[in-house]
Length: 310
Ligand code: HEC
Ligand SMILES: [Cu+2]
Image 1 (cartoon, rainbow, N blue to C red):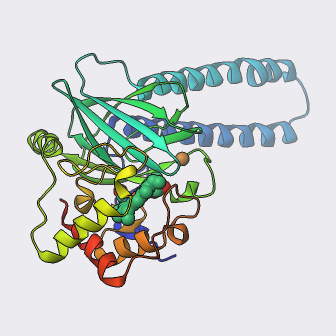
Image 2: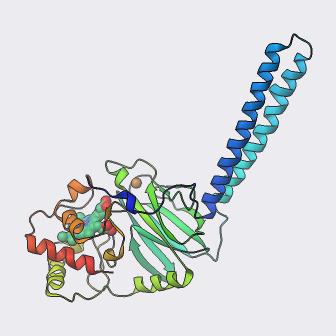
Image 3: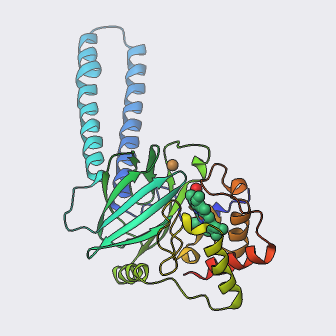
């Protein structure tokens, strides 16, 4: 299918770039070390039991069979329970709120800032070293939000709002993935997380409040016209052009995303045109019709216009 995942940010907890991920790594390492020590100890005891000829067995059973497991398992249980609690994040009333709604197979993202609701899609921009409260929702079936490098995952359940407080600690681009089977194209439901220094994050929020870039070239103007006359506006919003479409991702800054189709393909004119002409091939089951009746020039024009929206 020509997917180019390698270009995207890291998607591993071990390259941690957030507080939740760092704690998960700590817990994993501690458990692994403790398990190895216990394994070595049990092997020694087995050897000892095999070679010994009686006496003191009762104490081995009480000590090794009851007391020892009771202590180690209690320690490990407490460690994992407290880590789990700290990963989901203590509620922080001052933290910025980002509302993320999962749809089959994409993500609607709304930043709440100074009373404004600023919309984007498929790319989540986070401020560096600042706790952020994510309000996780679903529009249809159960999905799950997971950015392994930054934090633990949390389910997104229709009719509920699950809150997850996360703090990203490294600048850069990271990859997230829907982590709960949600239908045919579940594996094609990823997203990108971009962590920016606080000032750049603020500038990003302002850019969401502005109208989309003007169409400049004749081709871009034609592309905008194709967009306005082909039914795209029933599902897609572009600030200052048509703002009511909500069934598909907001396209006001679609050309600024690094990827197309919820973290799946490189953002460029060719992939945009291919997507519009035959979305059913690029993402089977996506809730968008394929426009394979558009003429070549019109298809190129609408792709060129969308690419210019950044
Ligand atoms: C019936 C609603 C609907 C219509 C009409 C529609 N789309 Fe879409 N579009 C969607 C949905 C839903 C998605 C998300 C698909 C997915 O990733 O699962 C999408 C995704 C996209 C994307 C990818 C956005 C991203 O963030 O990667 C582009 C670009 C796009 N549509 C362009 C268009 C254009 C251009 C038209 C008109 C020619 C159009 N769409 C018509 C529903 C629609
Ligand atoms: Cu999903």
